Length: 328
Image (cartoon, rainbow, N blue to C red):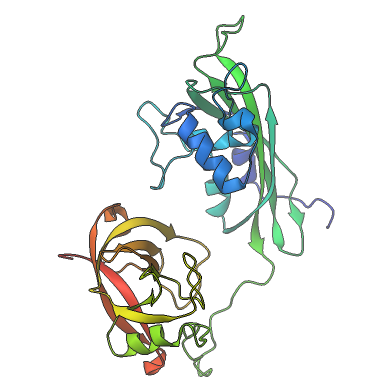
C-alpha cells in the first residue's frame, strides 16, 4: 500500500460530513421466538438457551442476530414507517460522483452490550465515523470510509440522558475507489467478442431424463416405483423407502411460488439482472428451482400461480424450464 497522497479539493466537502449522525432505522418486527428458531436451524445451532422455553429466565436471541432485526426486507430501502429518509451512505455517493465508482467491504465488526429477549423492539442510528487519507492499493486509488451503527432497545432501561438503552454496535468499513485497471472500450475495428453462453448442466444417468424431457417441452419428475414418492432434484435412490427403482411422471407445469430470491450482484453475463429465481411448488407436490420470467421483481409474490415454459439458449444447445406468473 502506498503513502498518503495529496487529495482533490472537493474532498473537503465530503470530510465535513465526518461525525454526522443519521436518524433512526426501526425494526419491522420485535425480537421473537420463531425468527430465533429459524435462524438457529439455518446456522446449525442447537443451544437450548435460544430455543427451549423451559430455559431458566426464558430464551434469548443469539448475539449475532443483532443486525438481522433491523434489515430492510426483500425490497431495497423498504424500512418501517418512522424510519429516517436520510442516506447514511451519502459520503460514498459524493465520492462516486467524482469518478470513484467501485467499493469493497473491508471490516464489519459487531460488539454486543447485552443479550436480547423476545418482545424487545430495536432501532439503529448511523454515524459517519471517519474517512482515511487517500490511498493507492492493488485495487485502485480511493478512501477507507468507516460508519458506526449503534443499536438501541425501545424496551430497555432508559439512560440518565433520557436516551434508550444501547444494546450493541457495528463498525462497517469500506474502500471506495477508482479501479487500477478499468475496463476499456473496444478499439474501432477490434474483433467482436462472442456473447457468453449459459453454463451447461452436469448430466448423469440419474438426471438425463430431465434434460431430454425439457428438449421435448416436457417437465419430467422422478418417481419412486417402491412408494410412489416424487423427488427433485433426481437421485439414484428414494430418500423415503431407499428403493433404487424409479420411473418418471410428466408434471402439468402448474404450481405456486413457494419462495424466491432476486440476485442483484454480481452481474454475471449472460444472465439478466436483476435475476429473479423462484422455488416453485408444483401441483403434483414436489418443488424445484427455476428462473422467473415475465414479471417485474417488485411484483413477485409468495403464493403466485405460475406456469412452466421452456426457453432455448446457446444456439439450441440448452433448453431450460422457466416459470411465468399465470396471466403475465
